[in-house]
Image (cartoon, rainbow, N blue to C red; front, side, top):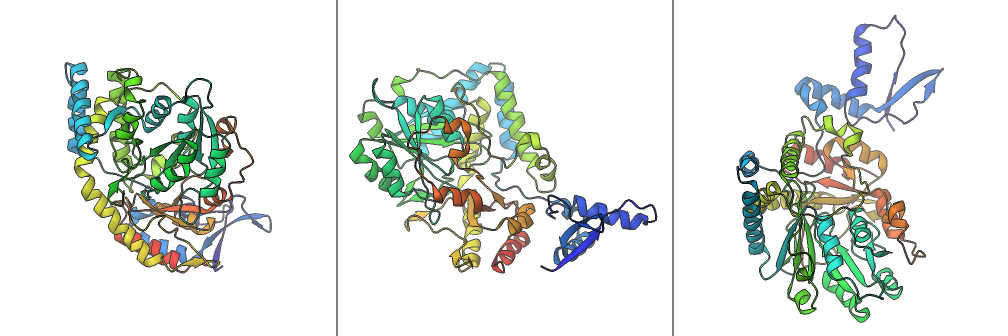
Length: 471
């Protein structure tokens, strides 16, 4: 590789300008030093790509601020007017009444998107999934075991543990991100009573195919549509593909309400005799403090997600931005008034946001469809030809070095571990013989490309250009 080597030293004879240049090399986001600096004659050295160094020098001349620019991997905008409306709901003198009114309005708005389905608004998608598992729990004396995809957010494991289930992990096809049929069938043979399908990055799983596999075993299929982002399959929107579905309204989803989730039950769930009527008539209501915390968090997330300042929170390890952390299960609560107000706004703005993300995804597909590394395409294909992706992010298989180079442009590794690698989830596993090669490959090499509006056209083109020449 063509490189430039900068020697780091504290010798007093160095000029002020030379010391400043070394400092700039340290603070520019995206320029990766080796974890352990090599030495040359006992002096530590820093290796940088000379082409990137020249590019940085020219960027400093054209736009000094852009060297600190860091694009978030995912973003769904919340308008200032929506935040103000949520603040007014919070500051209402009759908060309890305002809270109930906001939840009723949000439920009615979501029912217009999902007609004919029972809706329960919750404080998170994790709570919604936990409630779905509780509502469909097998009769006493039968094993409660849920089959989960081995490559997914660890929050699905949190929900299973919170509902008191054992867990079986099925593999994921790295070429499509769909469930590996044979692996799923082995989980069902091992005794799984439930199957959770998970849509990733706006790409929908063929839930009907999963239902065909699960039907001979009498297993309940639950659709985790947290990341459906408005995508459809055969004209049916994600979140309406199974009798039981859950949504998430966090900032990393296509419906950003600053937090919250929803449990949806269709006609099949009602016919089965289990459902929302068997849960508490009302979930515990979030108090004013929780509503205020949600409002402040949503406001801060919107402000700090701007690429000009995102590098600041991204540099704080305690915030865990971009990290996948296991969270212990908690008590399911109702959605806050703040999130309910923001959910209405998010649904109203969804069509425009989806159109922008879809246009960005098309550019990636057109530019990268023919790119291969070692004879393997870097883009996974759609699991079903009839799918219209929600284009939340574009998954792509990359080497770690080139991914680190593109990190300032919002290219990140989504789930760096399989669910089997979390000790809390591993304790609940049955059917431990499953090797999970597809999930482990994805955890090691799958990164995602941003599609949101805060990525500049020039940055979008830069990502495509760099990936087109990789080997």
